[in-house]
Length: 230
Image 1 (cartoon, rainbow, N blue to C red):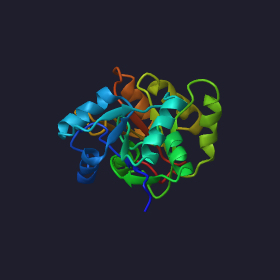
Image 2: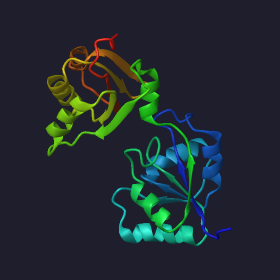
Image 3: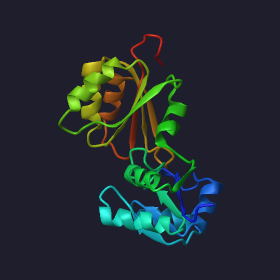
């Protein structure tokens, strides 16, 4: 048996603090250190479930020196948990580089499944979910239009993340290059002001043009097929 520790990759709530598994709570209580994207944000989740495990910062801008320190802890037998601000780590969140370093050092990596805004949104969308492509955030400037035009080639449901500040711009660009397809926008999923808007892209643009948009957003677009409509 290896004397090395393990890295537990743990899904945490995307909004509602009750959306966490019993296994996740147990693991977070029993590891030596929790690696958190933002320790102040993660403290709210830990406090809600009476978890007082020591936290250490790990995020997109962690230095090579900081990452080496984490890997050394694992190599020396420490058990660590990786969480992001919300949802599942490494899914449009920090973690990819650390996972690669753990693989190179033959450190065990254990998934503790939890919430993901991707699957939460798809489960209630009403769009075909047998096949979908997750695009993440579109580039803000360079390569943005090329990325949008490339979406024309996809023959399944498309999922994107977007900021409320760019939502209207993105929806208009999607309408221009993909046509008036059936789409669904999920906003603030699992939170108090959760909203799910379904219709053609033009309908959804009109809806969000009437008020200031806030919160986390998932955009889902149906493939170019007249049978997919509401």
